[in-house]
Image (cartoon, rainbow, N blue to C red; front, side, top):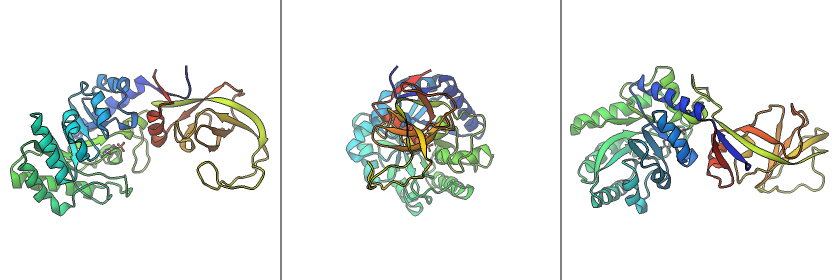
Amino acid sequence: MSYPELLINREKLAHNVRAMIKMGENAGIRIHFVTKCLQAWRPLVEVMHEAGAEYFADSRVENLKQIGDLGLSHMMVRIPMMSNASDVVRYADLSLNSDMTVIEALSDAARSIDREHGVILMVEMGDLREGFMPDEILETASRVLNLRGVWLAGIGANFNCYGGVIPEEHQLKALADMADMIRQRFNIPLPIVSGGNTGSLYLLSEGRMPEGITHLRIGEGFLIGIETSFRKRIPDLFTDVFTLRAEIVELKRKPSVPTGLIGPNSFNEIPVFEDYGQIWRAILAIGEQDTRCGTLQPADSNIRFLGSSSDHMILDVTHAVRDLKVGDILEFSPDYAALLRASTSPYVHKRLV
Ligand SMILES: *Cc1c(COP(=O)(O)O)cnc(C)c1O
């Protein structure tokens, strides 16, 4: 075994995928499972595929390329780079878009390999990340319909990201109405009305998803089991699919407050300390290169986070439940940010169990 390691519980992951598909189906919603948080790691995507997932999405073409043979659809969720148009149309059948020149580049790239690429037009609904302004949509749709390498697959919106805007019924209803307007104006099916990410799941579980929303893009929800608008558990989902494990390399009784003149720490922040007297301090061989240490939740809730640098994490283990020694392995539950960094760090070993 090598540490740090990220354990992935196969059964719990498969359960979450199945539960999520069902939750969508009950409301007439298709889900693209977003794999970017785990770099579309193949063994994990294989488990998801076996559990019934057929639609995958990622923010990186490199990731989509690895799973091209798994599932029926592959969506690019980051606005494609113009410089990358030919890879996008090669490895994704759908992409989210907010720029006409990029869409034209996708159309040219698709024509050159004899394909038709599906375009979803993102609409700005308040969160202020990607999207056309609502009053540009009809004109943009009309221009897309004139291109020969792409087809207009749908419209969508993003929430809970830059602005932290929570999707509510009124925005999603407005999105669905906009889709109807486009269908009527151009007499096209426009199958995808993509109502957001994990932050929209609360509407689904409360039976409040507006009619006309046909699609969601879900990453964090099925991985962590918590919706991101109100941080509530998603009914029936496991919240402990992932466990991060790291090894103790030093364990000593030392003071809780440093001595000397205090300047910036390794991340150029001036640290502040509370005096707990003498404590048992454990140093773990894991750091900011491996994960986001401060948001890891220790399996033993008596263990307290003290600080971290590139390669070390320091914990107060004075009140730890079991007797610890150098060489012991401690377990943590990662949140999305910690999981993202752990799974993209070359130093963290992923293991399906
Ligand atoms: C990452 C991403 C998602 C998935 O978000 P989660 O909060 O993980 O469900 C959906 N849409 C876009 C555009 C994304 O970039």
